[in-house]
Image 1: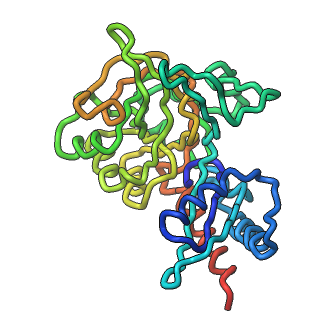
Image 2: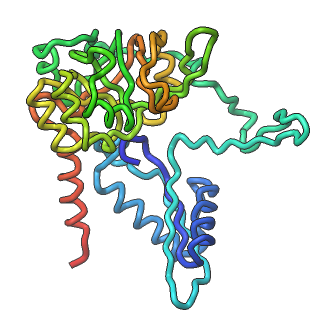
Image 3: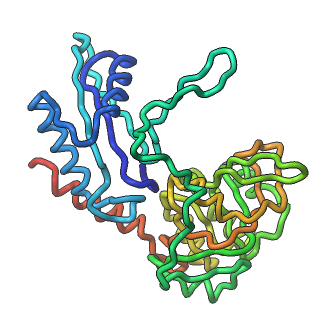
Length: 322
């Protein structure tokens, strides 16, 4: 998925619509290093891997030689009038875990797919982001000069106030006033998992969501409220890029699939606006510390996403058969 780390695809050739998709999903239970017993399918798997990884899209769409870590293809007898090809994508964050439940109590009696020699270590129990010395510390609210000095590829660590906003918040902000002053602040494309904790709230997961959904609104929101940073995954389009350049703002990519990791960076939840939108869609007022992100669209008109899309399109055109 664009904005995420490399994944795998399961493919079924033939079958009907439902059976083909089930068979495609079943391919994802094969080990990554197995060899397809059908020589033709094995060759097709290798061809798909070579073609996709040759496009140079890479992890999170940042460029690189690894976009897929696996392609597993199966075949079924097909209906005479149809020839379905079903594709199932396996997000890298899929842990392939299962449980056996006690039907009477709901208690977990056993775990499936776990290797006893490799105990699971919860991400929240692991060390935080390791600094290298190249990180730039940002403390909102930010001024235009600071933001325009940032360039594509800069790694930043954000500490201070941050606000979440998904589809409902963006749709509301283009027609109504904001409940808080967003000038100089960061808007995070995130639908968090939040638990009520006494009189307050506790952040359980706070990973980025796909940003392109907000493309119809984002430029207007940036201009109207003077936002200096938008955080999400997958990048945004030309309309947003023009607003970033005009206002002096940046788009920052967070790590797709690292929701618990980012929850650890949330020091506290100060407030919530629009709770009537539901937990994922509400605007959460966060206080964060050392929240890592990468500038992938800057205030000078540069976009890593735009450049890589153009480069991969050229690579794809070169692969086409004459």
